Length: 312
Ligand code: ADP
Ligand code: MG
Image 1 (cartoon, rainbow, N blue to C red):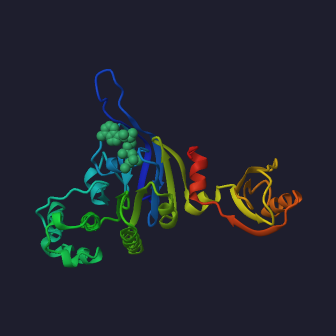
Image 2: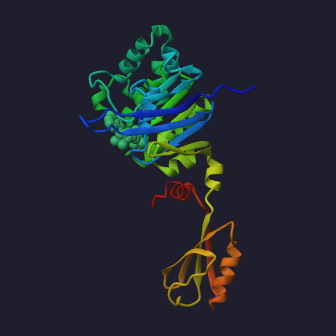
Image 3: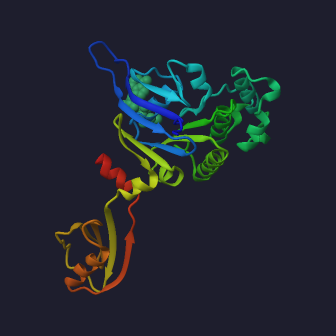
């Protein structure tokens, strides 16, 4: 038996309208295909302008796709837009609220929008979940940026969708709020919600997501379990401190890069499939240096990202 993916995206293309006569509109998505499995935290990673928000906004029904298809919880967004929309809660990148509503009213209005009977609404529970119970009756305009973001998460969950999508939830937020948002997202996921988040922070995707798709210039360039993706980084770095000043940079054919970063400290980048750290050390010793200290750096998502995008 195969489980329906939470989201299925097939050959999705978006060309924005041309800005003027005789001009060509931006091709923001160039035929993107991937599935978001149920139950996990899925990261859609890519630099600014990659097409992440365009993709999310198509799912939200805010942007009209040029071609291709998308299914949410098994519902095609064209054939079954109502059910598709009911299956997803979206926290947009931009914060917009009517400044004269209180957090409680924002959630109640949203409940009304979804036709949820007053007695079945979860406004109080959701306010507690996002730590805003004490701001229940404050005007939205008096909330801090972080509070507004949390309120947006509660608002996206009003109709209890099985999927929550957050577009750049931590862009420009401080460390403390970022931690709180991560906790919230993890908690929701543990409660059974499939989470999708877009981010341009590699570290965030690596720590939070069990699966990551990377898009760059509107194209999907990777889609793998996080661990596998990180494992793709073949370059390793070993930093060596030696007993005397290094006589200029020195290179070996099996090194990718050798950099003297301090008079007695050398950083060697090597292909872990080609040689071992031990062999690197032996080569350094072969140049007449005694080794006093060694540290290696494991490859991380950033290394993979640089490899895949050719960035940096
Ligand atoms: P991301 O969210 O990954 O930063 P976006 O989806 O916002 O990327 O943007 C992808 C590309 O589409 C960018 O080049 C952006 O300038 C362009 N774009 C986004 N929205 C519009 C729009 N409404 N009209 C025209 N071009 C747009
Ligand atoms: Mg964006």
